[in-house]
Length: 157
Image 1 (spheres, one colour):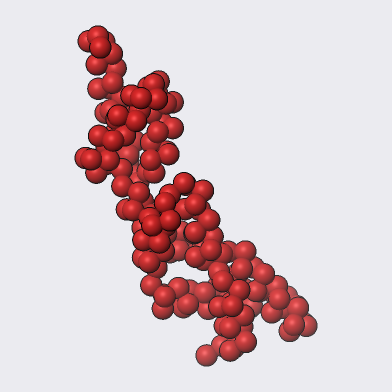
Image 2: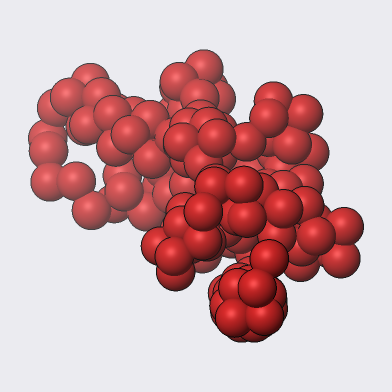
């Protein structure tokens, strides 16, 4: 390997480290960035293994941050979060770690808030139609249908 190649790889490592330090990244995101900045596949894989060993990339940590952010900020349900993590090509084990970060009491409390807020906003006289519209909305946000319908059937408490 020539000196210029070594220097190119060092600069790429600094760029990738900054990229990963800015916010949590998956292996796939970091690999894509490595290839985008001009590294060859074997160079990218070597740098990724270094960044993993230096804890710049940690998919378990990524899954935990992703799940809590999507839950708290976007008010997504677990189904939508699960699908998002699967799209990020994470292992099932990492996905489960991420989903475990969501406290079940907080989850159900947030779901109830979403249901009743939407219930108040839906302009519909027929209660059956209104309930269906509210349920469809919350299910699209990724909440489990049985939880949604359970809250609707129990009514406000």
